[in-house]
Image (tube, rainbow, N blue to C red; front, side, top):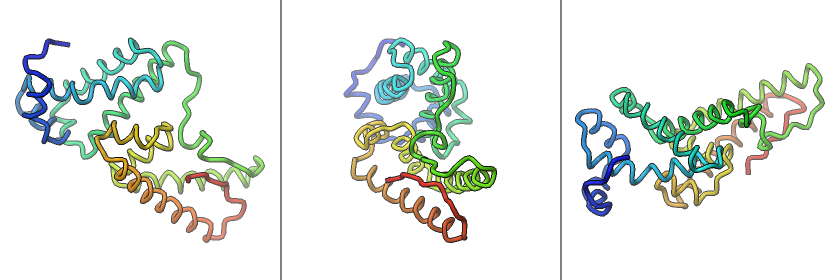
Length: 211
């Protein structure tokens, strides 16, 4: 990383009002050292912390985040068009972290929403029940995908990554109240979809803990 030519306060005062999409759009149009510095000062520590949720080592997290950002800045024009840049970046860091763990033989399987304790199956593994469970999971996944981008990212960070509301608020520059609102609305959608599925006449529906 290069030396800063502006103080952190100066950079923040100049660019602090910009959204992430505005930052990327400007950088795609024209390289700007001060804007790069602002992005690194604001997001680099957060991405390192997020990567360490998986790899646990600071040096490995630095390598992962550096690789992600290098790829990011090599494709600025295309990425700047994304409607969910925060989600794109955090998912990229997660995927790169899991790739690192696989290469170093430190992970043998990928835990996701369908396999962690958020989805607790209670029915025996008969062919009929497996079919019901698969259909139920599809309903859950579709409900998640139907959420607005920011809400979906908040929901996944809390339910899949196990982050506290305060952690998500700090990572995404949101108030804790806003995170709570996103989660409340997301869970309302989930409950509605699940109740609709149950009302369709399915029996032995798996239990989902989404409180």
